[in-house]
Image 1: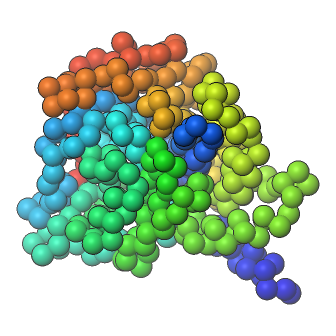
Image 2: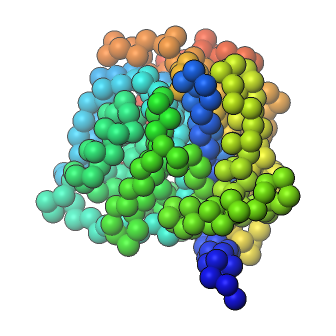
Length: 349
């Protein structure tokens, strides 16, 4: 057997054996005139309630890991999608930095001693920390290479599932980075070309798999299953095949088409392959215009939120858009947000 097919086979085998409960896709589109859009799908085997939240700058936070928690005051306002109102899973800040958390079964975080010398950050706050503190991918990567804290994970409440995720960030210039904890070590992948991320395998192997498929024309054959590796290849092909345009309406429509193509039909789950999970919601972040588009599988339309129209100053209010009970919103939905007490990020028990 030739070398590349052997690598391909081993990667596909590894994808088939990993065992997370979440399977998502993230893709970044770059068009002319500084048009940058980041899209993601949230795939989960069970219901994963989401709400949208607007956080102004000036909020004091801590890492929720005990006495050695990292502490900070948010420099930037942000709009996020929560999971169970205990974590920020996705979002964009006022500078156009976007953060997306996706499942990665191979994640292995460092051992954390709450009484030790290293500061800790609960995984529920990982995306929020970057939205609160950074305007660009470059500054976020330079900061992270110093490893001033470790990410600390725990079990999802009420389950036996240990949370294992990796984090992607993109900015308004189109720069990208992926953060993973592999064998207890932080691994950072930083390059503007890293526009697609799914779940397993680890990002380095996703890139190798994609390089193989680049030799096969997408108009001839593309892998079509719901597995993470196949979704990665389809997203990589289609995000470069769709029109490159500065027209926002066309660009958003095209990017939604890509992320829908990589979604898993509702009701599709597999006990034998837990990595295949139904898509629950999708988002598209317009990083040039600071508009956040959102749709769920149980509502008939896409709505959007203009981050610029909120008061993100330290005097601004925490605002919430309630998505429970299949609430349906139409068009620009800023006025549907209500002032709310912020949720508490999940920390160590």
